[in-house]
Image 1 (tube, rainbow, N blue to C red):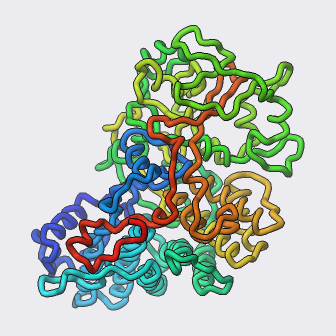
Image 2: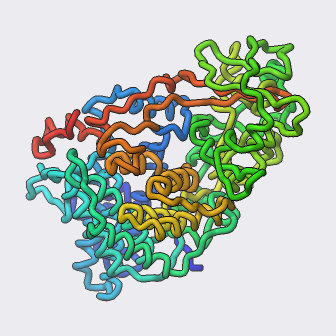
Length: 630
């Protein structure tokens, strides 16, 4: 497959930096003549490639971290600080969530203008390049529309002679109408050729399926969207999803490999951002925040075992950990009834093996702590505990690992997991659990949740996970599994139970290796769909926006709550499970975990959209009025 790796930044960034020096300068380059840049397709493409930074969620300023606002993730340090201002409702209307994306949009408009006027680019190539620029412009605006609803739509290259105080759109619907038109133009005019890291007809169609779901949810904002089964947006989703499905993509059997080096160009991946080791270090990838940094003396100090094979195999800055609230959605097949799929602690094997009446919590001690007990921090509150009954052959490992959704092992490093040649023991007296970091000065460079992410970790980082080590990396932005789920949601909104189940079961049975959902009602189907989407798209920058969308739809999509109401998951306390050294006792606790994760808030009157930065409105009243509640 012909490849274009988006880290030709070496040349491309030079172009990008020069184009940003004078925002209103119609000539984007100061070192290379515009006549040269736009004289041929090949030269123009160099400028186009540099514009793909629009697609990189990790370099968006938020590092693609919106899911940290949800109960999927416990965050520490910078990620925790970012999340805290959101879930504590301490944001102000001065907060900026990317509304001023005009530099990126200007690059797209420069492409459209100069390609159109070029005498050296063939008409057929002009058509494709302009479509590519419209796709990138649409995606830049989509990133803003999901957050603030309204955008400052600019579709030409502004000069000093223009009125620079452009207005914002009047509503999210107006914003989405512009974006949808750009994407539809892209679908019509882009080629079908698949080039790794570059858009094509199917890429634009795939993103259009999701964008239309968001547009549908924000109709009539702040009033309810009043979704009708015959809404044209639903038909757009179905039509474009079917186009993508016909494009030769296929679900990937190696789910874990799609997110590391082994299947980075899988035929399931529709679009990804690719970076090369020549100019990428581990510190500039999400891997920097997903593993521990624990010295042998810390493990010894807390009576932990075993030591890692390498003295310090992981030297990163962990900030992002899976929460128990989330991992409970990795369902388990019941051993007594293989057609039954439920959370791990509702299976017959769990109910038969565990005594929840036993008190297993003991005061923590750095040394001499009993192997059959769990502990808690002073601010933790125990919500459940239990111990394996005498005579049972089950352990907490077997109950939480056997017969479980196949994506569990592909996505999560939990107690007794092997990764990178090391055995992680995250229970009490283990080598990488939360009690190494939060008790008696043990440091804070380990998990808050007794789990780490496996999804998105490359297995060939060498010689160790040191932040300065060079590495390839890719971030999956769109893939076929996501399109199937978008299609399933469209059918749910149409009330078409049969087709909704057909499409949600694509990933559930293939990636999850679970029995198909046989939900008999839309209520049950929505429940299964929401679990499936949460697990399938974990760490893919989806869950927060999906929760907002479902909250706007209300009813079956949001636990029976009226449209635009509260969203339970954004207010529920975060949970952590501790496991004893002998793997026979467990306790589940809530607590602040350093960021008041036990007191999360969601103000439905304003949180469905972030504010337009008030300082920008103060400078240009045409950006107003401010979003409701801000």
